[in-house]
Length: 241
Image: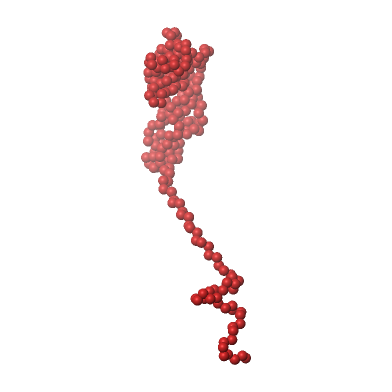
């Protein structure tokens, strides 16, 4: 979306870390402008003005005017930026020249409103899957956001990209079946306890009849029992038959 905002920029002839450090110490930051019929141009811009645009409702989709060295205004859009991870301040930004007569592809935020019926009445949970969709339109037709009412969303139902209401001049680029949000059943939190593996008892080896015959058992006195097939010695005084 185009805004009536003008950001002043100054050309910079040198590049590199030293130049970037010098610009930041002076309250500015390096930037590059490219796109269109002209080549890329290295400039310096105010990080506060760029941050204000990024934090606005239209964010990086904001089309504003850039004036380099007091020259003519050029419509541009922020396409890339870099933050300091510690100070959370802007370090660098890329700006793209925009032809207001040509269609461009941009990503627009999707904002859901309301309490789903599937949550209030049916006990489900609402999950947001996608927070933006890609569209194609003229630069001045870019919406700030798409508002979606999810009040009538029931259990196991979903809102898809094709369900978003758009103007006739806007073309959806994202897949039509891309899920924006849905209501699903609560997942079972308690699972069946894992079965404890039984400890196998030691295997008892049973002796066969041959083993029993081959290994005579010891008697109480530690002597071997006589063989069942052996003849007994005659007792003293016994008569022979």
